[in-house]
Amino acid sequence: MKKKKITIWLSLISTLFMLTSCGLFAEEEAPVDSKESTEQNNHSTEEQDTEEEVVEKDNQEDLTTWLPRPDDVVYHFEGIGNEYAGYTWNPQFNEEDYYQIVKDNGGTVVAEIYEYDVDAITRIFSRPETYFRDNFTEIGNFSENQEEEVILKAPIEVGTTWSNGESDYEITALDHELSVPAGEYTAMEVTITTDDTTTKKYYAKDVGLVSEVTETEGLTVESNLEKVETETPETLPFTVYVPDEQAMGMDTIEANLTLNTNDPARVAITELLSGQNTEYPEIKLLP
Image (cartoon, rainbow, N blue to C red; front, side, top):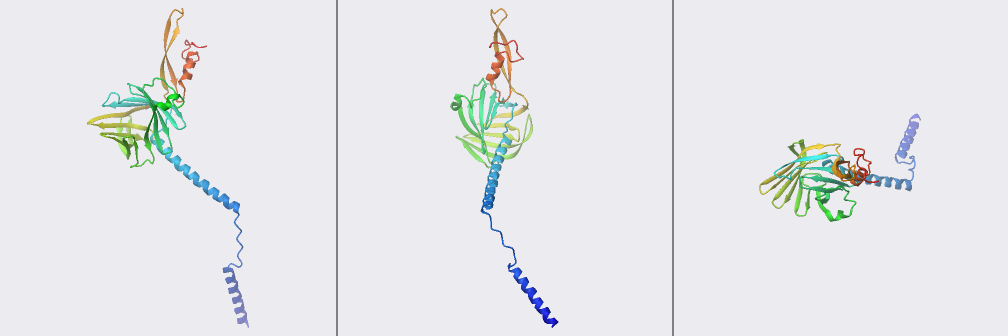
């Protein structure tokens, strides 16, 4: 009798175990809320958009790493092989996607504007014989001097190529070791080929262009970075003629206008001529 009861109990336990395994005693799954599902999908889309934005930002930062946009600096280059190979350049306006610089090689002064895009840095403006300072993106003759040349193009890796007119560009190295008067650098090498002329430009991280070497018909011309002056605004010489004490003639006063990046020259000139420049209190021509 006892053996029979044990058998019955074992049979009941086995049955309960099978029923539990089949899920008859499992809790019912709650229905999926359509609103919650939509929110999850939107969240997933937002994450994807954010990832794409990060990729674009990385491309932008990658380019500006090799060709940065510093304020209030002066880059000095020594020249070899040509009297105009040496030059200085400094920024004038640094706004949104545009970076305007002025370059002086002793023979002429050239204003240039570079456009910083997600996947390329392009020189879009070049104006020689520019002996005044103005933001050329805001004045009428900007379109007349547009000259597009892609300087750098993403991705920054060996083998990236692009073209400007009859010139072919290629990133040919990322770890080229070179020494210039400003120091030793590990630089990216961009090779430019035009007919029988080859130019190699070298860009160092967080510095920019450090060397440019052009070879054509057995002639080699180099421009090598000599030094970089930081926290150095642009200084413009300005000659002012003021009446002498007897109002019988004119006296000459040589002034210097100190302009930081994004400072309009016209404002500094107005302050100087109206007596607001404390360095030159004797100049007061405008009421």
